[in-house]
Length: 196
Length: 207
Image (tube, rainbow over all chains, first blue to last red):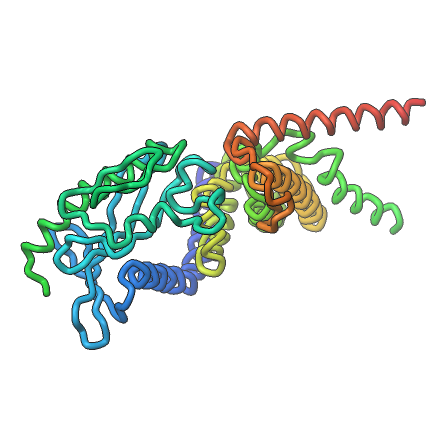
């Protein structure tokens, strides 16, 4: 056999063998991975839309909306993913809002890689032992009809105001900004669609 | 028989200390620096590497007389990436939380120099049994180092080891230790300590 043919044959056989193994593994892992992702999404939607027992996914203007319904199939609220640049990573937040999109019901940070110990306080503040999720909790039942703004080092007084994290103003501001942009945009799409 | 057993043991033990991939050969530093921000992450990374290392070393050793030397690296990479993909998919399916924490570093095992290094330097020249034992030793050496490094960084950087609170309540964690600079600082200190220890051992042996 010529040298070059030999090289091609060995590589082809190795690659075919490898393809076979991968196809076999994919056959029993892909379903589990997809199921797990679906399960996690369902849990997150239920977290930001408490009281919903089922959710319907609707894609409008290239954006996904999860419409949460209670057991009598009344709309509890609508959830969507808001994302934007944080201090050093992309922050993705699942936001649950009332059906007229005026008030945030709850929200959950689903993806971030901010500075550990500082920016990560947007998810979990370990220095606050009694209430480590205080930052995201501030957004619960927050009226956002005229946008969200933040204050530093003092308790918020006006509606739509939240307190920024000391030492992580950039991350706090990023969350506020990405919510403002995303809520305005989603509100327009959702209210126009007339889903009730 | 006695000598054979002895050399097999030597093949295994060299990965733990004398030829420890990280502390002595400084191979595979990318996952070492990136994945030791907690003991759990370091340990999981080590296990993933042990599996890939043993599987690929065994297969490469089996095929060592079939692979033409012109395409050996390409063949090794195909074999290694197959096993890495298997680990990646299996972890995503069965250990989703760990898989999420490791992010892109599992697929990156493909280019981990320890694995290609063992394939090229050992598995391609030795029998299957020896290659597997060499891979096991190297893998365990790697895992122990990563777990140790991860434990220290997690202890100082978050006050916990394997997420169990160790430091007293009022301890303020040094966040820098779980950030990238902490990895460099700690790895440097550990390698320094190991070198010092080795120098002491050689001195003693010379006397």
